[in-house]
Amino acid sequence: MKRIESQIKHIPYSQEQVYAKVSDLNNLQTVADKLPSQDEMNISIRNLRCTTDTAECEISPVGRISLGIVSREPFKCVKMETLQSPVKMTAWIQIVSTAPDSCKIRITLDADLNVFMAKMVEKPMTQAVERLADMLAMIPY
Image 1 (cartoon, rainbow, N blue to C red):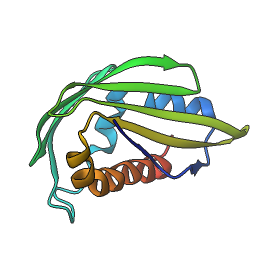
Image 2: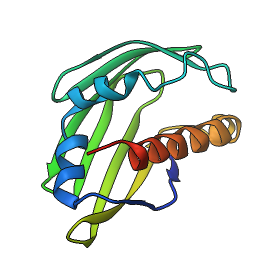
Image 3: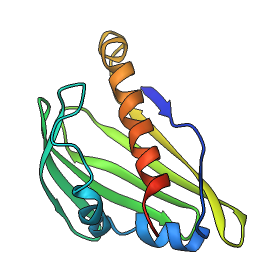
């Protein structure tokens, strides 16, 4: 198991506002336009489809990925797991209030990888987790 944690990101919105946005995967549709068609690592995300509890997309060169929320701890944490993926992964978005109108978040990802694969994908996975945390820190809530 490989664990990757993002840096802590500060968000100028209340813990409740941030939780409301990240606990409903339909809200990913609103940020889909901001995703680059292809980034510097030659990864592209296409055909994003979301419901309240699931998100599915095609990630080139990986293939179809499906993710589902498995638990919500109101205002504090949203836990997700892959439903369809070449690699079993679990992710948490943790939210901590710092003031009535601000909070901080951290994303943690556990990936079920053997030692060889972990060495190969650690850097791109770390970059992806950081990019997701940066995106969550910049969107309006």
